[in-house]
Length: 151
Image (cartoon, rainbow, N blue to C red):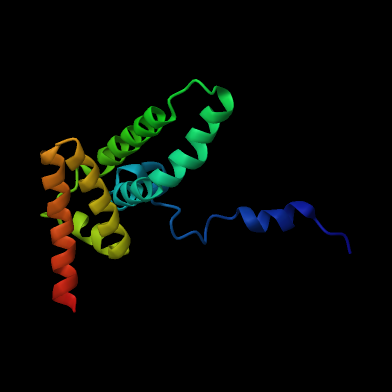
């Protein structure tokens, strides 16, 4: 008995059993995950919580090896500035009046997110950027009140 390779591989090319064959679904192509609230909140949290270790472990070590004339304190301050303001870009669109943002906030571990919010508030407070502080504090208050109501 001789096997016909075309018949064997033809079994895998038959689209008749594909339930999505007649639909024009491009879920992955159309989804821009970086524009979703859950992604933005996660990136904000990650950036804030990793600032100290990233600045110290990577940036300062690099400049220590490159040249001893650099002011490491200034480099550290600049690194923190860049990281905090980049993190702000992720969280600035948060609207706790919208369900999608509320649900995305609830999906995060609230302890870590509240810690990140407190760090960011402390940082922006140091530079007297009270609008950002107030915005972040409203998110923190929302999370803490939701924790209290679930207890």
